[in-house]
Length: 73
Image (cartoon, rainbow, N blue to C red):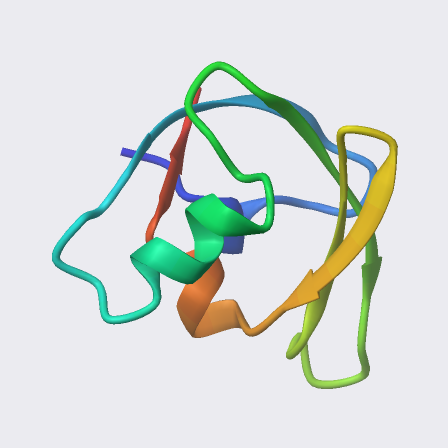
């Protein structure tokens, strides 16, 4: 399944689920990455880490490792 870490610049997707076994899953949910929410990758740093997403009208930057626990469709 595709994750938020696999997105290309400007790609817009819907969150399907969050991998609850990931150590950062609770933090990811708390900042707004919830199932059913639409996200867009709006910026990638030089080495692809961190990645900035538009979520609920806010820009949130997370590490690529954290983005890998966000399953998207």
